Image (cartoon, one colour):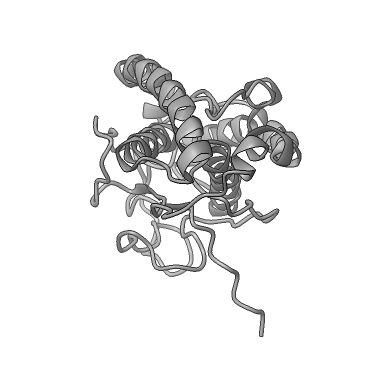
Length: 248
């Protein structure tokens, strides 16, 4: 019997839609998401500024100011919902909400527990030196240029849509176009890469001292600790789910 995997504090969950996604909607999601891209551009600017302030706060006090922490977690959460809807996963046709807060009935979730104390020494090296091996791997997953350019204690909101994730999502979209079904193995693999990228983003943003595992946790359910919200049942056409239906 395999040993249970140790949960990582950055938890990334997603629930496949109980009904097949549209064959055609993915063709125009880039247009539908323009309002989110505009808002996220400003949010990630704030993420960068907050990250610098948090760096000095941790260096001096060993604590990440709670209000700043909650804001940056909210930016990651918002970005994850947008990428899950868009070309980072194409996991749902439900339009993402405009909020930094957790939305319990949306199928994509990200939670990071607030750390009471953080290492003053690690804050000097973890976001660039210690994270370099992960940057190489995540660069393959989502596109190298976006990740090797990480500086300071900030990430980049443009991580999805490139690299291996972008290629597999495109293949999945073409399959959906012709069959109306999202292949579950591709979905699980893409979610594993997205989860890896988000764990590294949170680590580089100084939200945890726990080094991200070199482990591809596939599927929508993050292993280990209990999910933030109950996950939906398996979608149509996958083991444990209802029979597939034809979509238009």
